[in-house]
Image 1 (tube, rainbow, N blue to C red):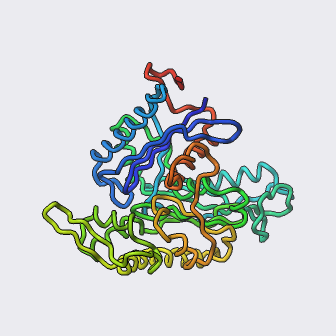
Image 2 (image 1 turned 60 degrees about the vertical axis):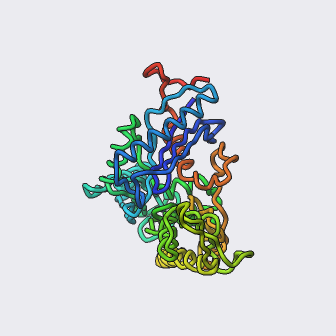
Length: 401
């Protein structure tokens, strides 16, 4: 049985998930756990010792859950889900001379090899290469050029890469917890693979992975990744805005955001005042205007979607997202965020539930696990013959039930 693990060290939480292959290309998340992150800010590790403790804690939680099921496993490596503003995406077009009058499989392999051989700066690490389309001479947008006549074959790609030092910090923190990082992967495209069908990618779909420190996005059109990137606004920025505007603690602001706030001003019915409990037994509670709270939240989210709108307009994609927007990550649970996205971007919106993997149906907000689910799916498709688990008896690979 092929079994894989995926780790996400996020701004607000550290997540570890284990998946196993089932029938066909399906994958089942057999176990997952999350704990609050420590030593991480804006998706970057600021304290390796604290991050290591978080990873150890989530490993112990996985082992506790497995022991309760009489499964004895020890996770030795995992695929790393990466987010944050240090992730960048560049368009690159590789080309090769067509050896004969028509494009052959060898010509296609040559142009793919040339595209993959593009060297990154020494301080960057590759997360993914996304092939978009081929071109033969001046004819663009070709899905399969084999057999076509021409002299030059081109391949248009997106190269996604991250700060090498930030990835190495994650490797160090995981290594200190006796967990090897197998391969780093981009959170937004992982989420896209987990929640989108091939038809939705062909029709045009936007994935928004809203985390604590940033928001990753991936726009698909005609079946391929057309545009992707990271915007440095996430759920923590909203929490900070609330704390600053109403002079609360971070914990109080987070509670207000989750329990009371709405992305749409005036959408909440009921009491126009929101109660804030005292931060200590000696502090009296007080109330703030619900309208003012929603205004603060709305302003930050509109800033996020305004930046996103500009990026999609620049790429000529805003009006090609016919399947709509799919929101994932912890920020997808924000009250009214779907309505605000529909208003600001002018497209239908739905919560991005993982549909290409099984085992997360019981989670109330399983969209927050979309990125790690997509990472497991990637591992299953690309490392089908390799297991990343070993039994407690040593190097013998085993899934013991």
